[in-house]
Image (cartoon, rainbow, N blue to C red):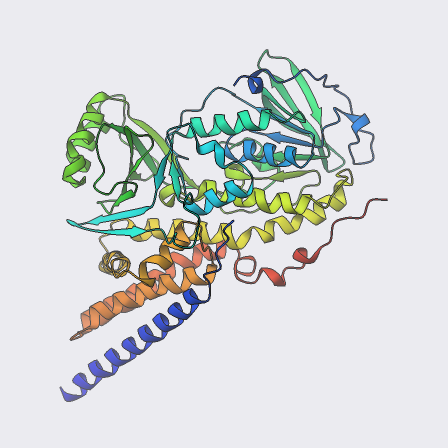
Length: 535
């Protein structure tokens, strides 16, 4: 019995020591990384330009005499496509954007822009696109679990007063960016459906598309950038897509109600998975109910409404319950599959993938637009030294560095989204239950324990090492809760499984993102490539 007691003391001491070391490293890491990066109709008609359908020269490049004279073709004018068109057009590129539908989109995702994404918007000169659309400032999150709640504010103290998150109607935001891109004389937006990429001797030389009148045309440019969204029909030509659909979002709009914490997103750790609330206008609140699995109850026959009223409504905070039921009764229930897809490109001369066509993560953390805008900044800076884009082979070798340079930011946000979704989802496993509770309690501690993870989530400090340190600090904190003050064999076993479960959550995501590119990008030779010299 005395030996058992000694074992408990030794075990408690070791866990406490590990926890102390993790938290010490974590505090030092956060203190050393506070240098955050601070920094309507014309588009529907387009201006007339003749597109000549012809074959290439057989030399693997595309000169202005071999097509329309465009420098870049962009497929898709969503958030990524419209922002990219304006950015490249402002740098003097001749840009031809082909979008399937130039009317205002109506989506239930892409409505929350994190502060890190807003900073990228400012860097691109697009910050005025969140004005005059009734966008709402977002200052942080509120977490709810089992009748308790905690507020997590963005660490915005070192930024200018206008820096915060923004939430809005996705379609209004996209239209503002399209309109701004169309103000540039060297940017053409055209409505049409791209049916295929045009290839000659292994090089993409342009696209084939149908206009809204049904006419089949071809457009040519030395660089084609595909950003036609999560339903892309062109991505298979440019990457190895491994799309996972862990759940679906069921979307509702609550009208004329007030959130418990104004100007904050709300995350309810419900059973079986999270529920989100955030404002999208001065009178509307978006509700997204996560339903695990690829199949959801039918909206048409009333199963979904019944599920929302009987299972979900009782888990909604009391202040929002009546508005939630009223929204269900109103009947405008929409669903959207949640997709996750690591970036796995294969270099293709003359073409590049961006946006959701290229890389997706669970939308729980609202990181998609931040990743897309960050990618555009990286690509803009890469292309600026290039005055001639016509050497397709050299251009492709040079642009391989894009896939590495984007990794630290993109993979941090991607990994956090996937890991948080798994931690926040309910599970019958005791170790997973403890991990979920430990995460809530850890964030509730305040100080570095909340500002660190929120800085990661918001894109203000997207550092891969910081993500790993915080994630395992949560796990060790959970083990400490189990073993103190008096451990037992059962609790020790659950603690061991908790660490194993945490490793099983985060390491596969990191492996899919690429360990070397994520943590050691400087060791990837592509980073050091200079712009190709064109004689």
